[in-house]
Length: 282
Image (cartoon, rainbow, N blue to C red; front, side, top):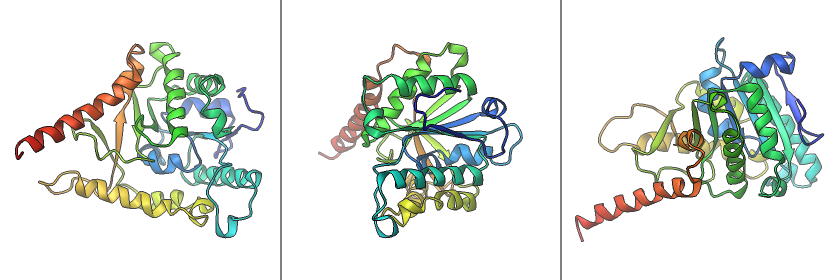
């Protein structure tokens, strides 16, 4: 597969050839940064773990040069940090037994450039080679600009595919903004209670971030537990840990849908719900 950046990489933990590994992928995570997949797409990783008919594949779009760094990593250059993060991502893929881990190695600035067609072209090529059933990516209300840029590229690539090549489901997952604010009827609930040992193992691999000043491991665990506990105030918890997602499938099935209007409709429904609740008392 010819990817735009010469520094892009395809890592196959099993050692198989790329042509054999990619078509097996049934669940594909597409994230902006190293560790995004392990946090937002664990539902897919766990669903495929040691299954014969299901395989998780990952795509990380950026190179990690802008990562936070303190302590041991304080004096690491951008190039050194990129290498560390690439290696960590490959380690996570090995532990999680992914079918493949693709790192496109774009600078964040390049990824966020709307006039740059290359990320979308790379993604389209990978999607044509994999044809997954489910895709996990960032949600369209995320507050991280690079995350939004990745999801925009994903949607453009998916819309460019023939209908029969598109996935059955596309989920926009929470990372840099929780989705607790969405109406419960609008949320897609991802039960991530299974294999907490695996979740801790792959999430804890990213030492450059955890020891480098960001306790993502604790934050993600806290959100998973919080989502499950606070989801429903009137019944016992059905799951010990939950992750929320925005179902982006309609945007893929109908390329004429406006992503801006689609996303802000969730916000309008939330606003109306709050208004109706307050009107009962004021």
